Length: 130
Image 1 (cartoon, helix red, strand yellow):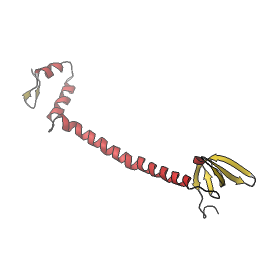
Image 2 (cartoon, one colour):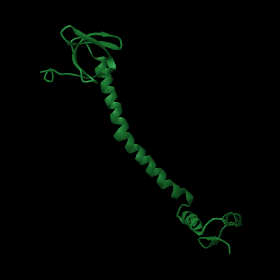
Image 3 (cartoon, rainbow, N blue to C red):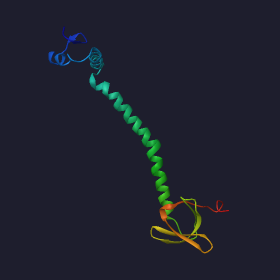
């Protein structure tokens, strides 16, 4: 009995190669080929959905992270002596000097530490420092 798709006999070579497959696999293949546009439209929908999901990920995850990184780089570039800052370790201090990628931070009277510029997470504003 030859295999038929939409009432038309399938190619003998295709039908012969499907002999070892189960009936559910053959029915699935027949369903794919019976769709309106053939195999192209059946595979087009998941591809479109994947592109939409990737677009959502870009807008919700990657774009905000890039904006935050740009804002942090601008803040680190604008550091100057006398700024009150907070480090990522929670140390509050005042910038005493800047030496390339390091900052000399005054944390108490007669106590100065050298930290990486990238360790500064926040510059305190006038109302935050009170």
